[in-house]
Image (cartoon, rainbow, N blue to C red):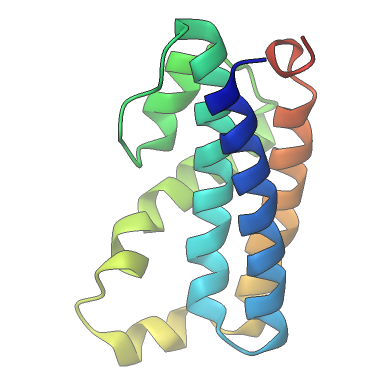
Length: 130
């Protein structure tokens, strides 16, 4: 496995653990943010193996799925599309108070649970097993 792929994979696992810590401390917006980042880095790990160079600096998960040539089950793909759409608002909120209302604990828990499923699925990709 390429060194950059290994780094992306390790960093993705670290980010997922950070999301868990953010949940435990009530920082729910950052749970969603770190979940997105974890998926992004797993996809970049696979993409680096496919394109044999460091992947582009993008946060667009759908683009990375295509670049990495990953086939996700429909339910997981739909979740990735959903979290992809919240990336910008969690990074650059127009109304922070509203954002806090939109992402309470139960929503953050749901994002974290689904992210764990996506990351597990991505870890099972053949390109990361070589």
